Image (cartoon, rainbow, N blue to C red; front, side):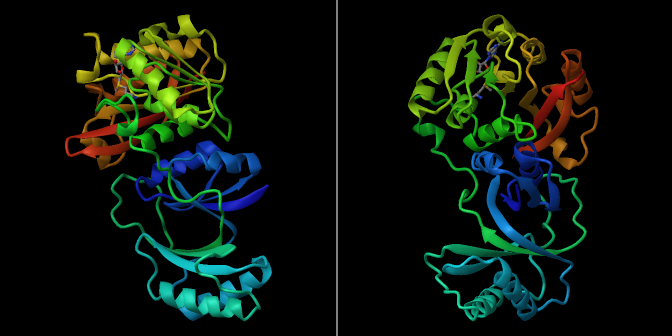
Length: 376
Ligand SMILES: C[S@@+](CC[C@H](N)C(=O)[O-])C[C@H]1O[C@@H](n2cnc3c(N)ncnc32)[C@H](O)[C@@H]1O
């Protein structure tokens, strides 16, 4: 076991932390974009599959409320730490800011001065090709977050550590337009990957990912690419063929089966699948294939998920942009209904909404990413 700091992408800090928690939790939050976790080697490989974890720091050290700390003082502390923890080999020092950074600390001064101190310990600087990259982070307040964040940061913080090589930035994938089958309804790959990882819990992978509204296969591809079995279906035969083509093209390690059926009949087809997770974005408005009400269609999928013995659901529902204004009120409009009605639809089908995260789409639309667990 070892303890590491995870640094998250700035796009949506609450979702970064939720992802870290479901992949390798429990987490200790140090900053909206930094968490501290204790993990083993298998959890490390789960992190490499994350969507929003940008980097990992090993052998880390932290300093709270560094007001009045000069770049020289900090360089001396980093030098003492390097003497004890930096393995032999070539090194570089890279400093960066999170949020507003910290007054009085200059990235360049800290890099140059700590580099000089560590060199005096008979270690060789190599900025191009170091064996060890020391990352120093000046973590200040986040300026006006674009998504509501319940975490309240009371104090600035400096952390430093050795950058792990299992991650080189947040998740990137080919554009979905490169796939053999593309439609505008295709989910952004970063969001699709995130929804798959949010369906993990406490470091455990789902036994299968079930997407009853697979469309072009955006979610199915992400699950298969990280080696999870996929059961995908859609009512529309063109989508079924398209998802199959896309999954063959993606050539992921997870086995897949794609079927044409309505979402309320997935249990009849797939049967009990203890420990699976349902991950989907349901049809709404123009996407609704039948004239049925979107909430009824969702309800059918939730009911089937219970019968299949799924252990979690991650979904994303359209919501009014007021969701971004702060705590979600029971009369917020979600899928054309009130949030209260939507929650009770989940409950009456055996699911409780564990957490909800508003995501900005455009001026007049947001989406709520929901993570749900069985209610009993
Ligand atoms: C929002 S799209 C899913 C997009 C998909 N996540 C992707 O990345 O391409 C919703 C899908 O639900 C399908 N659909 C509509 N009504 C359905 C129903 N009753 N049962 C199953 N699928 C349905 C539509 O054909 C559409 O492909």
